Image (cartoon, rainbow, N blue to C red):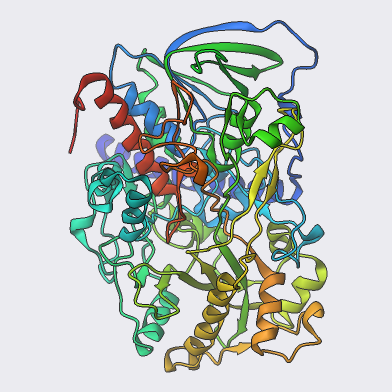
Length: 628
């Protein structure tokens, strides 16, 4: 056979493509292997002293911008994008972290490991008395993202809005109908580019946007355990639904913000493609220590921050927008003199405005410790095969969990329209790494796993908690992490823990359906040592079990809540302006007056979209470049 020049060219091109694909697979394999090893070795910081200048130095002038955004997370990135659409406005984002290198972070399958990296703050609660009792020092981890994109760099990329009634309730609290679901739905749809990739999944297409910047899809192919979960729920009378539609109660297949299986963090979506805008500046490695507020005029004038060993002051000609998240936003406010009068006086911080900042921290309590053995056997898949599938946009590496089904329930059958319980099921595996990720003591970890190594696990999460905690400063030193006291399951009537208990009861009912019986599920946990005095599997035992194994879901909200009455704890009004201070808004999960029945990153995105339009409307009397 004689090869012509054209055939030889085609042949060599094919060889080049094959070799290129092989090298790409090897490169991604190495990224994963190195990423796992780095996460295993990584030690979370206990403070932010990394940012502290080594010596006192003169404050340098960083100039003046129309809008200074403190925090380049989910809300901050979209606000920066939308405000910089107005060419005459100069916009600065101050972000403590960096841009992602899109290496290990891109693989959502390892999202738990991403919390042990430079993209995580490393926050922990103070020792707890009502939950987190099975962890080292009885503290819960509060994983929050650090970098351009914020927590979207390290989370499980779950696209979840909550229930419409959550927003109708906000509207009542704020006495502002513009926060009702029918009015905020357009902001959810504005940023969304929905792809119906799993045709077996129930989808309410009228509730989704298709022209936004953020890709949303379902994992392909569907994992069979997702179908088992849905089938088992049907046998108990629970229908399928689109949990981002008009009615969220029921089972669904997770919608995730990925593109062809790769994480879409908010920085990569809303900032990186727009860096050529001359009026948009992102200052990374910039740790904000204070917002300077004029004591006489009560105008927020400038921001103090440290960057690479130096201290800077940047002035805001129009507004400062605080988008540092539910932990850092209240910390910065209190350091700036806005917070509870008594607390600030104790720390000798001059009071600017007496507001209940940090007084209503809420989070979803979640227990991941329901482990069942099964006769299920899966063929092991090599990392090479997983990466090859990933490059096709499919397979195990393209989603945060293998099974992608979720259930939302009104477990009390109270006929309320919004759910109070979320249940997720997936394959589970005992490992020292999992113990580190969740902070378990050896005793707790061995007890709840029993003799099982590979199993099916269930997560039970209360998505309408009544308990609340606090965030307070440890000192006036801005480089010390704040004192985070979650106080999960602490409500006086035990309503929160009872929802969790009813969730456990429901899980056992699920495992007894024909759908799961074929896998011979058996609860394998040994009695937890602190609960051994109680009858195993009794209600009293499960209450004890839940106080040991309930952790936060890493969904902190409500530390600077929206409302109308500062005497009832409101920190911002319905336009998200801080009461008593001019030129200062807050836009992140801290403004949520109540938790949403879902995962908060997308509602946070909606808040960013909405506040950008509020600002445009205040300046122009209408919203220019409106894409609705």
